[in-house]
Image 1 (cartoon, helix red, strand yellow):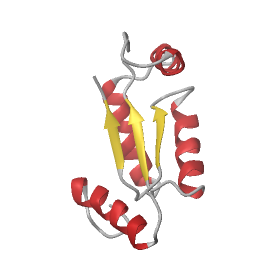
Image 2 (cartoon, helix red, strand yellow):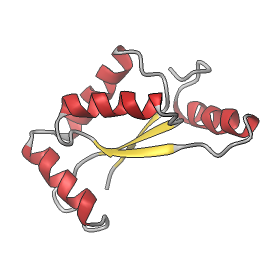
Image 3 (cartoon, one colour):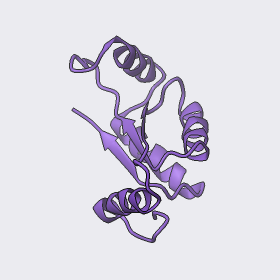
Image 4 (cartoon, helix red, strand yellow):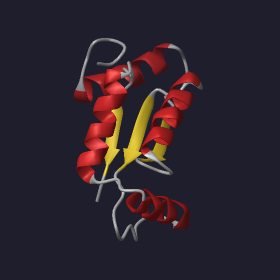
Length: 110
């Protein structure tokens, strides 16, 4: 759940409302799920939240991410090579929730 007890779009709206109430823009961060490993993704999400991220966007790796630039393309390829799958991305989010992450997490896919 989010900091205010909401889920889904209400959690996202709440993150933007909190930031606006604090007189600042919301910080949305992006990571490729499973890059370079699933464990590293957990560590990076924790670091982003500690650094002030309001929302976490996790990219679901895809075998042909032509809409992305070369950095995200390489990260997607390496995550796939490391064994991440769409189902693994959902498991990763569940593990993040189980570990206490309450910030909104948005999955980005093609």
